[in-house]
Picture (cartoon, rainbow, N blue to C red):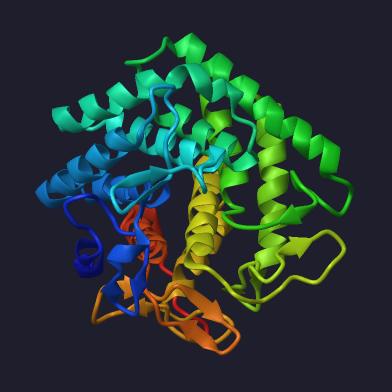
Length: 342
């Protein structure tokens, strides 16, 4: 049985709080679209009445944070919306979560999602951040009518995917199969988005680049039969050593989901195994052999650090943990579970 206690503790009448101090939610940290969009996806995956209630709560926060032009304020603090950390990435995440919510059998959930999708639809083709594009491609692959015709959805996905392809052609060489000269956070979403775009468009060029990129990412982050995430201490730049710390939980989830998408598209068991290994990172299959999950609180520690773990348990961390736990409930993931190497 999955433990949602910390998720519930981090959620109040407004939405999901951003940070915690140890396991205590910090009301002074405010609320972000990034976290509430991720929380919405988790609530939808729960699939029960508790998930329905949470989904409505996160959607209400997102509706309130959406501007008339369809973009979102990312930060809400002390009753005020702030623009200081707005980004295309938060728009992409919000768009993805709304596409998934629009497919819900809960009518009020789907209606709120469609309301936001109709407002943001005219602007999504202008996204240029690689991750924002990838989130949008993933959203488009799940969207079933309501705001556009099928042909229009395919055209927009092809156009956005082409932007990622152009970045890939600009930056890649025989040893560097990537879209930029560096890898930072949530790297898995880039090939993940392209695999999703291939499912939608059937474009073999998209598939080829998704395949090359996921294999390149795997070669960088899986060592010694466990996941070693790109650390945020400078990130990984072409020609330099990969920083080992801090490793952030959201990157483990991004890798797990990308590898699972590769498995679903390519049908190769090796990608399923990499997805399982990424999920195992939270339980101690990592460079320190330390669990990131807190069994007592249901939370997830914020980072794997050089000294051990960051004991704070914020929204991003717990949402990434729950998303991988829910992924592990998929029949193919559960049926081929890999135990931690001794």
